[in-house]
Image 1 (tube, rainbow, N blue to C red):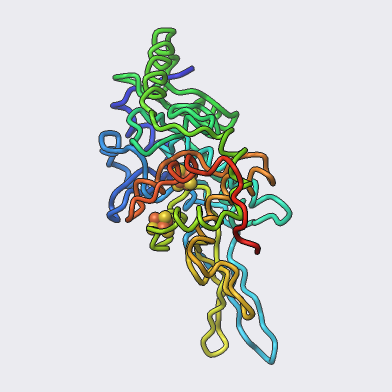
Image 2 (cartoon, rainbow, N blue to C red):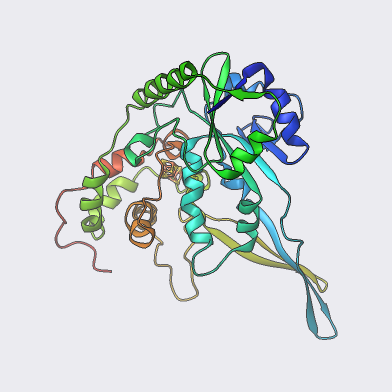
Length: 346
Ligand code: SF4
Ligand code: SF4
């Protein structure tokens, strides 16, 4: 393992900035998100717990032009955007968000390969940073993660006092370290200090859910309209929990055209919105409780049945950022043990 002095983080990022567009946690737009590093400011080392906007935004842009088109002589000419080959480095991603990225990769390279997303993924290095001060709303340890776990990233940094311990997780990460000045070999003491720090962080995550029990109970709850109506009562369908969830990836596609020139856009969408499933003949999720049920089942029933992994990392954003304090852990823990009878038929 390697280490770097905390006071040398600017030097480290400056070297990487010559090769990559470096993203770091920032609050410049009001809500913490990964934004392009200005070449100087590393104050995030003091305030950063996690971003409000998850780093999925580095791969699935909240709005992008898929292609332009122009009507000429009765037909349309397409203008495809250049492939996203810009090399990015995301510095400080938390383990929960790195895992979330691996989880949504499965969708974007499944039956249809989404080049827009995958090009960005292939050209990005993830530099993780252990989360030593988790929020009360975090429950990552219930999803098989640890707040300072070295997985799903290229390098993992752990704060061990005056230094960051660096774990080289992938070959890409190892190669990056090999060409970076200011990185030195870690000692046994550094490694055991990092172990202690990680143990302490793990113990700080006190919110727990029993995922085995939930996976057993949840499928039978599907038709329990009474339960879902109760659970959904205070939700105001604002969509925040899904926009800011690192494992939510729904998008909408629109064509805009003016006098023969146009573009196809895609933008984030949310299954919390009443219009999300509106079709000419009907809307199968017009009632709010059906949409809340969909969100929970998608993460804890449907996604595991397709990809063998729960599409939730316990990052806690949907709990701490919901304007009405809707809490997914309370919902999951309150799923009835038995299926209700005489409830919804559809
Ligand atoms: S953030 Fe809260 S109120 Fe908004 S859609 Fe999600 S659960 Fe409902
Ligand atoms: S469902 Fe909530 S806790 Fe789970 S990953 Fe999404 S935002 Fe985080």
